[in-house]
Length: 229
Ligand SMILES: Nc1ncnc2c1ncn2[C@@H]1O[C@H](COP(=O)(O)OP(=O)(O)OP(=O)(O)O)[C@@H](O)[C@H]1O
Image (cartoon, rainbow, N blue to C red; front, side):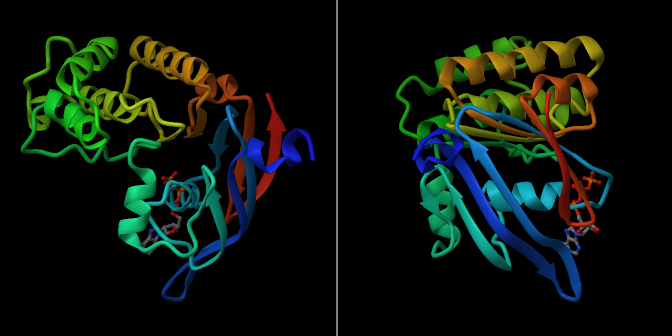
C-alpha cells in the first residue's frame, strides 16, 4: 500500500461514528480519515456536531457506535481509564471552556501534565511555554485572575507543552484579539511543523481555517463537504 491509503500514514480513522444522547442523534455516521502531519479545519454551524466529533476523536467521550482509531490505538475496547492513558503525552486538547484547574496557578496548570508525562524539567519548560504565548508575566496567577484570552493562552501552552502527536483545538483563537490570535496561530503551526504533528482545529476564524491543509464542513451531525486549501 502507499500514499494516504497506507495505515502507517493515518493519524485518525473514524468510520461510521455515531453519537446519540437519549433520543437525540448528534452524530449520524461520520467517516473521516486524517493523515499524519495534516492540519484539518472543521467548520459548520452551531450545533452541527463539531465539538462532539472532537470529543470522540480526542478520546474524551465514547462513540455510541462506529470505529475510531487514533495514533494506532483502537478506542473501541478502551474504558475511560484506558482512554486517559492513551491520551497522556500523545494527544493535546484545547477546549472552548479551557478546563484549567482553578486551584493551580498558570505555571502549575502547564507543568503538572508535563510531570505526569514524565518530564523532569517540567517547571522550566512550562515557564518557556507560557513565555511563548505572551504570559511570561502571569506565571503565578490563578485562572480567576486571568482574562478569558489569557486563560485560553494557558490552555494552549498546556496542550502543546508535551509535544503531542496530535493537537485538537476547539476555537483556539475565539477569545483573542487579531494580533494575539495571529501570534498564537503562528505558534501552533510552527509547533506542528517542528514535531510533524497532526492538527485538528474547529474554527470560525477564516485566517485560521485557511492555514489548515484541508477543511471539512459539518452540518446536522454529518460531514457534508471538504476541500484542500
Ligand atoms: N450532553 C449533551 N446532551 C444533550 N445534547 C447535547 C449534549 N452535548 C451536545 N448536545 C447537542 O448536540 C448537538 C451538537 O453539539 P456540538 O457542541 O457538538 O455542536 P458544535 O457544532 O460544536 O456547536 P458550536 O459551534 O455551537 O460549539 C447540539 O444540538 C447540542 O445541543
